[in-house]
Length: 188
Image (tube, rainbow, N blue to C red; front, side):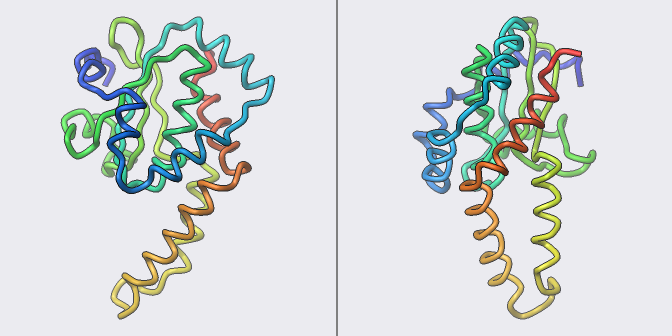
């Protein structure tokens, strides 16, 4: 993966403002998280240290994605505090890059955040979820009926809608994302 020069991908991406303005599905949730997110003084000290690394970021995402509604605004605010310029690419329009960052080697799960150095080399990758959010989604999936049940699609829509509402309104869940991203960005 590190042999990819990400500069071309970065140059192709949208700014956060352009990405949000193009949203049709989860804009309200993204705006809510972005506007309500607060960092601790410890967070700010970490972001100040990360700023010294001169990183840039590429996010593979999509408007319809509930995980993106949670993670995109959080990582954007981290980036702003860390002097990381971000660019946003729509997953399905950028599969060549997406396929280099498959979750568990098989899934095009998003969002994926690729942090690159000035030469365009990948330094860190984070996504699609914090471990705690992954545990929550596993619990949610256990609530669903069997996939061949007559009401599966209806129940899936309800359960995932409730999940998205929960993760985009609960600051304790946001904190898990902050800590998970922080653990990736702290220079070892």
